[in-house]
Length: 128
Image (cartoon, rainbow, N blue to C red; front, side, top):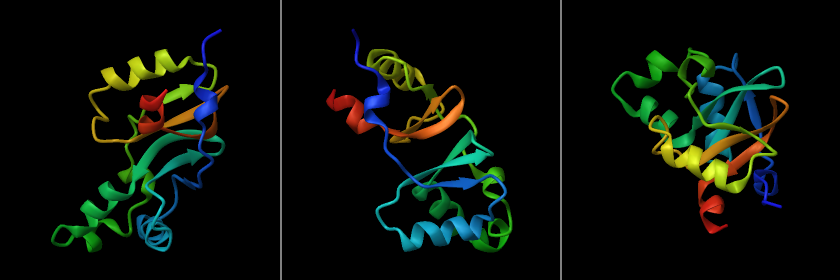
């Protein structure tokens, strides 16, 4: 039997798509070890927001003033890799390797029947 991606689930906080970008920025600021957050609508993941990407948006001239009042749903990566918990490690490795939209992301979303379960780490996946 193949190993499943569920064994790599990282329990991580989430944010709702309606949360304001400034609030999420503050959440990252107060939690220095937190690198990515799944963005949810109800229990369903709809994207991912990474600390570095949000910081980059806020670092541009007028970046804070033009982005802090947006919702995180407007700024998130809506093409984040999302996989079901029962996918094999090999399947997820292939999905991550072939994903052109998330080459810079070290995290992906793990679901169970479409509901958020946790995050997965590309680094941990590579170690398996």
